[in-house]
Length: 377
Image (cartoon, rainbow, N blue to C red; front, side, top):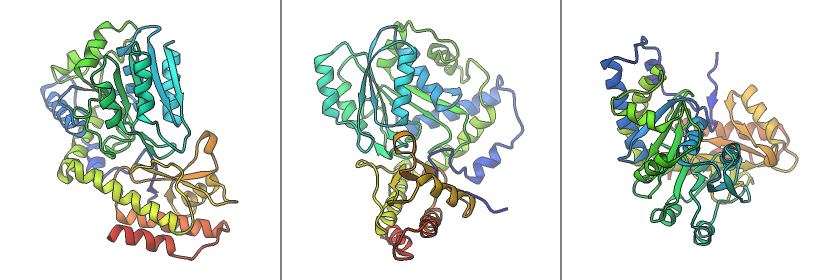
């Protein structure tokens, strides 16, 4: 059976070494042996996060870590800003509303990202804002938020900056401590090259002080319990044992390559996709497209969902379509996970074949040539 190539914004392709680690015999989690594995994992995550602050681990999807930041930082009625420029910004908004927070929802066009000056002005006008929730890499649109600029605005204020890096961690440059980010949440199935099932949250001193005052209900996602257990290299509840063993293997691979080289690789591969698509007359959807995911506007008369289905079912390359307001209008190609030059060239080639089959007129081979040129330059 032919292997299907995943050029999707999660789950992503898992390296062979990581897959093999998941097949190791299970061990009990309340043992010195597993505690050593867990300690290695949390220290490795600090490297990926670029932080000296504690990183807690939950057995959940990344959404669990997002919810944990809401319930551990805030109290009923607290005022927060939520930046919504795509589906995952919407998830922040839905979480804030579920816990009945006083939510200032900043809706921005999906083909752009937030202007940091807008946040600066709001904080000057309303200094009682407790937290700002935003998304590093909005994979529904391809946009990447300027987290460094937002951190400059918030780091000397009582307002916490909370960043969803579920699809950005290990892909897009993120320096949590240096940039003054208070909380960063993420998940396992994106840039960390793991199966789904783990969620992470880094928590700095400002956030831990807010945690002490929080009055929202919490149980499973209680940071106090997680941080107390972290001191003993364990978790309050049964962890994802095999996934944490796999996490250590994935972090080893990232360390061997070097985190800055990993960031640069994603830039290089994403640039090749963009150059290939532009060479055959296609446009990139978001003006601030980054290195995690390219949302490509479909040519007139081409439905993005049908294109994705053709690529997946006939050519065994899995892309993703658009969501909500851009459903059918774009297709998305990602370089996250265990993706290399050959995967990208194959992906661009398959898009060419599918577009030609669907009636789009262009010079055959031009996208692949442009992608190859970008990779070799």
